[in-house]
Image 1 (cartoon, one colour):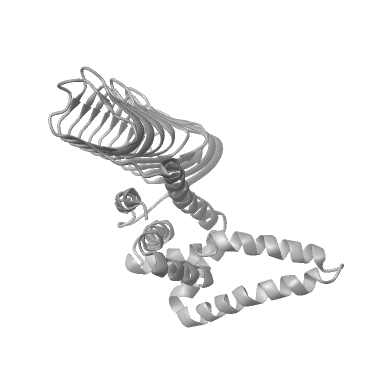
Image 2 (cartoon, one colour; image 1 turned 60 degrees about the horizontal axis):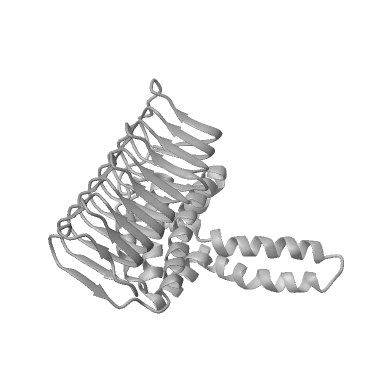
Length: 353
């Protein structure tokens, strides 16, 4: 199991799913928060592009193309995008930012943690991250300031700014430029010797042997985290689109756990049998194909109601449907990642329920 994933999962577990949630759900082509249109609650968004110029007093969970933040978000940002996430020079994220995106550019402030899975991440000379930076991806460039540690699996890393504590990464190539400042230690796993300018590291510099399957490890880490965040975002969208039946499903699990578990078990066994029987007949072949597609989708999204029910019960039914789902998803995936054998059982239980 990849050690960094445990740290990442623990950071994600700090997402604000432990309190009451009164979310605003938005589906649109262009999501804009204007300077004169503040939002005083958490926001869940599915859009083709997004721009935050004003203020969001809460969290932003968004799946989109490009995302630009030049205003203020008082909570956390969870973004799954196909384009670039940019925190402009005037932009402020008072909580943490967690993204799965091709590119992240930080020219403003992220006051807590920054987590990035993608092709590249850059903290510009005017950019800052208050606490930790965790990156799984291609490249990371730090010309601004990081308050605490920098960790992750990266192909290429360049530091020209300041790091408040340690630099602890697996990397193909590491460069610490003249004028940079690392207040703690530099611990790197690599097959090549880092290029470190004299006087830039206050602590020790230690090179450890790199794993032979380093690139595969980076890809696997990205795939794991991408799958987790995609599950959360898609689960939120599904619970919103089917909010009546979704809420009813969660309630059914909470009120009749044994009955719903038995129905799920019989369905998981019965549907493949029905598919085979229908496929054996020419007339039933189209229906067999449809059932097979539904079964494949259920293998991915089937656990959503059970995960939401578990989180809702842990929050004593005070977190709302979305809050319960996010907390349940975090704990469920933590178990799957960190406890291999028990993880398989956890997945099956969630799927059946």
